[in-house]
Image 1 (cartoon, rainbow, N blue to C red):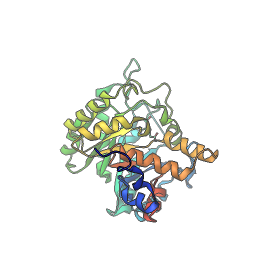
Image 2 (image 1 turned 180 degrees about the horizontal axis):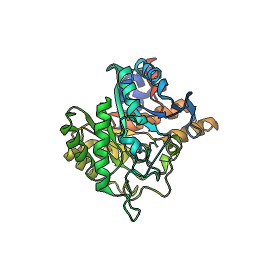
Image 3 (image 1 turned 60 degrees about the vertical axis):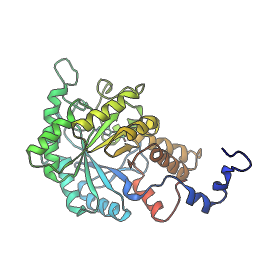
Image 4 (image 1 turned 135 degrees about the vertical axis):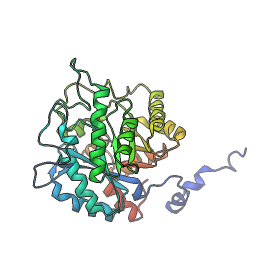
Length: 331
Ligand code: PBG
């Protein structure tokens, strides 16, 4: 092995042009996915206080959002619905006229195949108790009763034109159940993105504001314990077994080890979700003058990429796609 002074690792760091050609990891706009919140009953976009720069959109504004996303060249949008009425079983989720299913139709129409239309498949935005599933008599989240509703939700979303369903509810068996329901309804081509390693995270805090969540308590009986890495890998392998087309790790930044392991063992694409709290931390720290906003955003995303994510859901998708198109380096 050659030693100093023959081996000078600083050679490849000496100038912007050298660093640029020596950079191991890159991001492309098509690898970015924008989460989009659609709220029932509003006429104007409503800024989300906890997520500076992110708004809830009226359904009529979706075509413009799609145009912007298509022009930016991003790979897709992930739709979330914010209904005006909620109930114990999340009826709005399975109703073809529910806000999310309506939004999917409008988005799919506007997209014309230029980017993928993805939808969050989970009951939490639609239940009055805010849990991701229905409750048993003792107040616990009933796994198998919830699967029946996820199956209906999957078919309703696919009927509406969603190409990729983001199964984020963390019920056991949800991928197999939705796959079978989709196939039986003639939706063999609908893609399942399994939020496989979804941790019970404090970093979802601002999102709960964005969807006006009514949750009391927490989701620790179904989302993963942050102390467990191995379990994240087990969840991903189980989902692949059940038929997941893509697996995901979420949040991203605090779980880069899980992302790396999952991406190494997975024989399907591995994605990551840079969640609301990861976004808000950087935005607020930058607003307070503590960090360089653009460099922090770039570093956070290239870190997720370096750990093994092939695509990233991020609230900065449009902005970062613009930088990349302009040839700006992320680091
Ligand atoms: C569940 C869902 C959540 C997020 C995405 N899908 C919330 C949760 O599980 O509590 C969080 C996303 C974010 O924080 O940006 N429908």
